[in-house]
Length: 69
Image: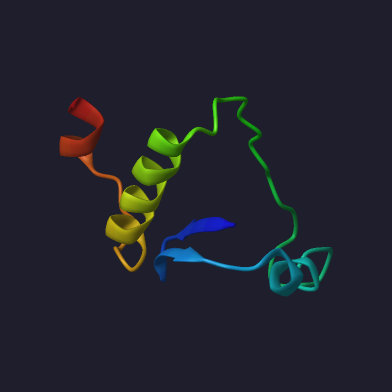
């Protein structure tokens, strides 16, 4: 799972790890999953791996400049 948080930035987490931390009174009260239908060909997988390698570890943030793009 790709996760973007305000304090930790973008990270990768295994579902097995996240599952035990979801629910009332736990770290995550609820979880939203977005399922996207797409062709999972080699070209897409390469682009996804490139995106993840560039995004993981970056700080997450939103500001007026990003909104105006």
